[in-house]
Amino acid sequence: MDVGLAHLDRPFDYLVPAELDEVAVPGTRVKVRFAGQLVDGWLLSRADDSGHTGRLAYLEKVVSPEPVLAPEIARLARAVADRYAGSLADVLRLAVPPRHARVEKEPHDEQPTPTAPTEAVDPRGWRDYPTGPALLRALADGRAPRAVWSALPGEDWAARYADAVAATVAGGRGAVVVVPDARDLDRLDAALTGVLGPGRHVSLSAALGPARRYRAFLAARRGRVPVVIGTRAAMFAPVARLGLVAVWDDGDDLHSEPRAPYPHARDVLLTRAHLAEAGALVGGYARTAEAQLLVETGWAPEVVADRATVRARIPAIAPTGDDPQLARDPGAATARLPSLAWTAARDALRQDLPVLVQVPRRGYLPSISCAECRTPARCAHCAGPLALPSAGGTPACRWCARVAAAYACPECGGRRLRAAVTGARRTAEELGRAFPDVPVRTSGREEVLTDVPGGAALVVATPGAEPVAEGGYGAVLLLDSWALLTRADLRAGEEALRRWLAAAALALA
Image 1 (cartoon, rainbow, N blue to C red):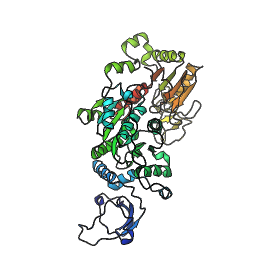
Image 2: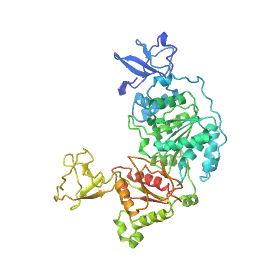
Image 3: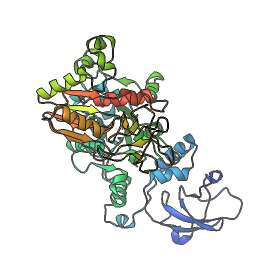
Image 4: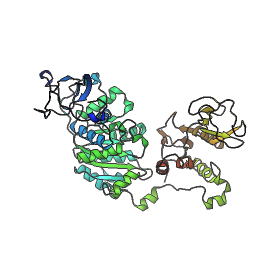
């Protein structure tokens, strides 16, 4: 029952009246009387008798005869609730989307569609990984392999996941794949359509809207499709004969559910693989501490390329600020765009190749300070940091949004301001002046680009919003690295490395 009290997080017995006997099947939504109130609940199972010695109340109503809660999902939800110290009702609220009556009434076939085997999967896409073809064979043979995959730079990860899913379907089983965001979901959707054909999978995400999401959910629950892909909303998707669960880029914070009990998609999928005795695949350009723990404990072997292949695929990496670089360019220690980075961008543009510039902060000048004494500029009302929204804009507080048109430094009384932190839009403006004949595009909070065409161009993006370039980038510049490393986060170093490797993977070898 959905009562919100932890000490009531357990099943309760109710009598089923004769008029509800046919529709009151396990997995349906019901309403019951509890403490004098009509509350929502789930019918978990039916039995001929009860161990309760007192008087039992009757079910009040079966909301819908559709058994949307599969037994294996109820078992998984219970395990997740216990792991995260939450309630079963909270987890089921995440697992089963809200009912859409009109979608339920749409005509559909009563019999589930059998999982028709696909053609044999070509393992050549995994040939750069010595154990990759064996992973596909195990999935096709109906076994339950586990793997932590470190993708090579420039790897078409969506195509590799599509190969793994196709091998699972070829073995007569289903799969669930979870990705961080809508851009990744679109890439995986296109790759799966190319391998499995149309109509063999559905996508689940909160962005679909109530009707489309519930329709896709019912297609999976009724056994119409063997594969479900999506964002974290798909981690509880019901799939018959589950053979594979997979998650891409498990270090992305979008995999963490912001609602109680705050489960992480990786942990839910690994728990699901254990309960269903299914295969598991955790992949990314960078490996999280949790994924490394799976390898070190022997729960999942790693799937990696040999060192020679890695060296052939990685781009040339040139850090700034080391001793040889400072000897040639003393200003590199303080310059935001050292000569080494400027030269790399210029050479790539001369070869008619795009250049990616990763900037940790969005906006124009997200942090400013006094030009005289360098004291950070703060709001007089709430002490929040002041920011400059545009070149001719007025400073405003990032917390309370109050405008500070007549700002004066409380330390020295100075009224001139300077940039303390430079955002993506200001970076794009500066690069536009440095390379006046080159188009500049931005990808960030206001507009996230999925891909960009080949040809000379500057692409300024915040972490996580880097578009894929046709043919790859000629150079990738990682600016203001200190901003990622000095975040107030215990995992700042791991997160910075993950974002840098994801950007570097878009560069040409």
